[in-house]
Image (tube, rainbow, N blue to C red; front, side, top):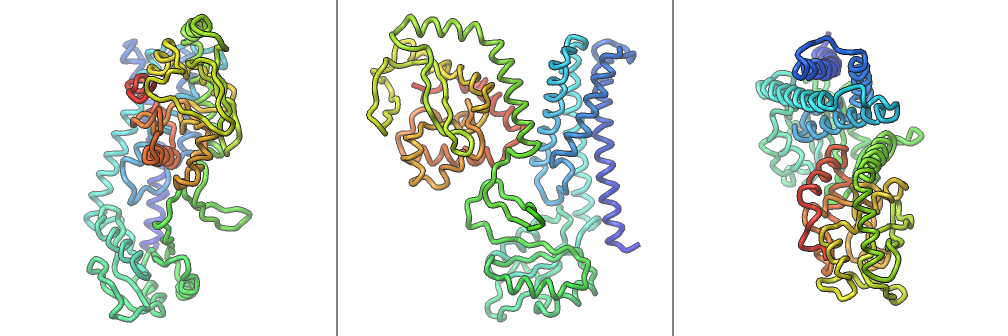
Length: 469
């Protein structure tokens, strides 16, 4: 078998081994948790059923996530975030099944919590250990892939230098091909010039090159065709590095529509199974939270009604997912007043329109509790970009770049911008730009674990803020 065939076979074996070890980690964590709490391995049937369901969820959700994609060259932090998100989705799904089937009382909550902690710790330790092992092996020249670059301009220089600085990826860059005159060639990390593009095919076959990376601008389609023609007899992988670094992108990816390859420059992450997970997360958490805070909400509703004339809820139309209008609810915190048509006066510090009770509700964010009802209605998410008034959208969509891309997901009660201090009044363009930047970062990097992280930060610091008034 050729070296390339052996590497491909090893990749398959590694992938299957990873899947098997993840299931073993979940099983061992369940058994260890039971022994830790009860001092015996004799599990009742209800616990065994929970383990079986948990393993089935692991088998399905781990595979549906990006957990088993090729992580060569990617950061270990990114892999751990994905692993944690997949892990959280398993236990969220398991909790949902237990709640729906009314079987939650048949197992101890303490055992489930121990199982969660032990399994998460096992998954993290295993993946970090494997990364350390693979990096060491690849840095010593084993399990590597030979790469040549076909470059043009600054993009090729950046790609070449980046790859040369990361030997732990196992990508060994042997040199580059370029058709430009010698005086126009830039130094690419001391990589040797291997020849002209017309010589590429023979070199790749003779030197058994594994990958050819093309670093061309979008306008160089004729050169791309030339390279593909030169490699028509080669089995090497050909990768295109599109010159998209000059653009502000959102959740960019490759996909296929009707057999047509498509490069997605801006798209929503909430599609398919990810959308399903997000919906489960929102509905389950919103139901549990509303159940827990219903006495507090009734108390606040009574105080609002007694403190000033007007309705309990303030309802305002805002933009939701895909820019569709939605009605967002809050406890009323202001005296009844009228705004001029097409104009909205944002609340400011010591605003005379805000009631004494309203000031307390705003400073503690308790005025936003009715939005959990909006989550159950499907209008909002617990975590997402905060919905702005339509008048503010009209004001900022022209002055803040990619402002309306915030609506690629459902608006949220809390968000990445809010837990980073950008909440309340946006009285300058710079504040709104920073808020939008953080919102787009959330959309680009969304995961179940990222949501849980934001919720935790909100619980720790988000209910009281100097900008909430």
